[in-house]
Image (cartoon, rainbow, N blue to C red; front, side, top):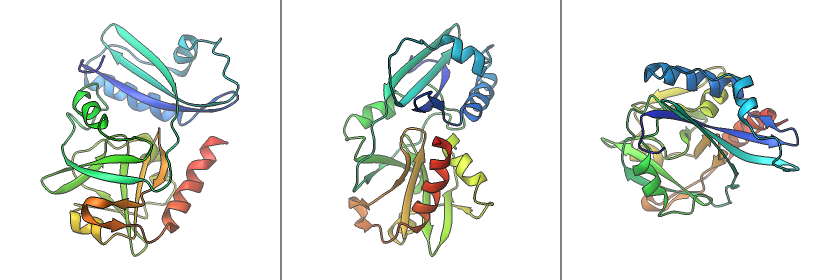
Length: 228
């Protein structure tokens, strides 16, 4: 379905039951995007559960469920979540996703870029007009002097990012993030449904290395509460 007019969302499934992490938020945003694209369909948790197969024989889940919808087609795919490894790095690429306010299926360019990296060890950070925007599968958070900075610009604000921001009392600022801001950062954190919360160790191309994990630990503990 990649390249079609439609939307998708990726939901983490965790535990024996399993728990659908931030399910209501995913469905709300998916339906909002469907309306924007004039696709006459609305998903509910009950509809999703009815469509899910019940004979998968998975004893304990840590999987990613992708729900993709275009006109007259709904697709479900379930895959094991690949756990990010230590010493996680980022690569910088000049690119801005198509119609970034919607998590749409115009994703072929991003998939082609991802083929060149090990997604368990590395993330691609997109920038446009010298402003950092987001990762290929994550949102970007920059920490400097205990201050939290989020990018300004056109990028997709993911479910995990919005959840974490709702828990920190708006203790953050939006700004145009330049390469110099990355170079002087104490922490660079990535968040997303698939990767969870990641403390970036380094960005080799700008010779940046992490000097702290204080905010990462704070956000990780908030995120882990959703897995219980």
